[in-house]
Image (cartoon, rainbow, N blue to C red):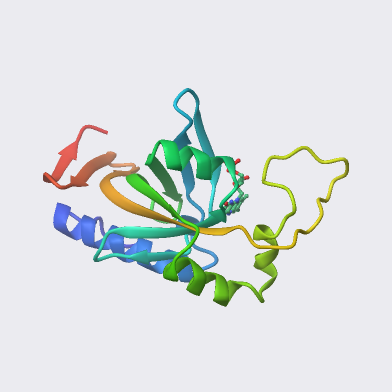
Length: 182
Ligand SMILES: Cc1cc2nc3c(=O)[nH]c(=O)nc-3n(C[C@H](O)[C@H](O)[C@H](O)COP(=O)(O)O)c2cc1C
């Protein structure tokens, strides 16, 4: 990106445009955010792939195994954070999100229908749940899929720009847009 954007409205529009481009661009660093959740005691975090985005509705889409620890955490504690960093933009986003796991239903089955013949389908076909102890390096394939969608509804965006002439930070949420001390 060339000149620095100077208005909050322009920054907000640009960050949603970038987010919308990320799922379709395998080289985009925002395609692999870190998703932070909690089990009520410990914070937990892991890399995920951003599979889709609805910029108007302010929702992001992820895939996971419905038996995974993160799925259990989301069911009990649906508020989480997605962290994204782009070295090219020098922008970090921290998205506070309300997470919803969808293992059944039309949306989950239509995504699974598209995915099930692709190599990535095996991620949802293990016999044992993610995190189970194994006797060898590779676990067995199971009989059925445990695919789930995770819908992340963005409640607020914390935007940070690193820059030699001064870092800038802003928050975008239901209360509007404002600058913050970085
Ligand atoms: C680049 C990368 C992308 C990943 N994408 C996903 C993903 O889209 N969904 C997912 O459930 N796990 C994904 N993982 C694996 C998770 O980081 C994590 O190891 C696994 O889901 C178990 O997490 P949990 O124990 O917190 O449930 C990815 C890992 C890496 C390194």
